Length: 221
Image (tube, rainbow, N blue to C red; front, side):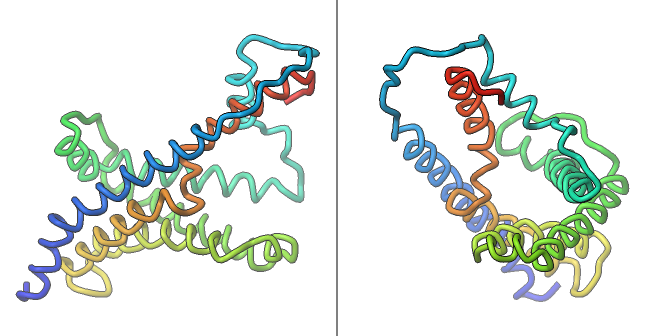
């Protein structure tokens, strides 16, 4: 390992990691404060209908709504589930990642065998490529997409790809690829609160809120 590789890896594992975590925590807290601090005007109208737990019901119904599948959208939905579940497994069920979390938070949980997570990573990468091709080839989705959508895709794709390359000792020497993997993950952490990836924290808030509002108005959610 050359001196440059050693310094890059040490910086990524040390100051780079601390900086990324600090920006991530600050950004998430700031964005949540901005969103929750907006508040809303009191609805003085009489509620047409108000079911208990309607917000929680909407979270479940929107998360596991297989009734929307049809021949034209089934592939898109399936690939979306594969991508998100695969990403979850790669981040939170890989043993080295769990040990990193244990070192930061003081607790961890059982993980999956590394070869299994490696296979999941390949499937997840393929699913992301399918989603990208679908976005750029669909006239409507291409029109609605902005640079922010492609940035979010790239920020998510790079840690997966670099982790796969590092594990298999491909492209560059292992220390270099490991450093690039760590740096790409830190870039993801630092920019997450300021991109569309913030939906990882706001998704269920939004679904709960919509369920409560729809219930009050007597609209099925």
